[in-house]
Image (tube, rainbow, N blue to C red; front, side, top):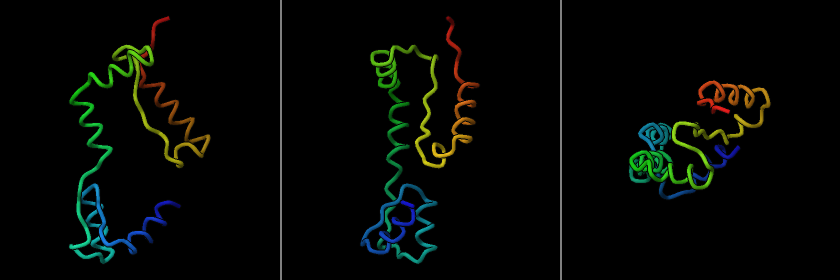
Length: 106
């Protein structure tokens, strides 16, 4: 699993950059010293928050590239293996998305 490779890589690295306080604390619990750990923030969360602060970006993509109108879609990221490798789990996720997705009129 990639997470296990990362754990080995952590021990080989001089500096460890973390996204959250929880991640930082986990490294401290594993015995890493404060001078090797730097909390820098969550790049994905920062990108989402920036996009939310500028909804024109997402609207432009939805309107010009996908022919969608505001409020007619739901954006979801389900790319993790635990979501997509199981047909049962993937089906449940898609069923849930169908429930919350605004219905288009014919």
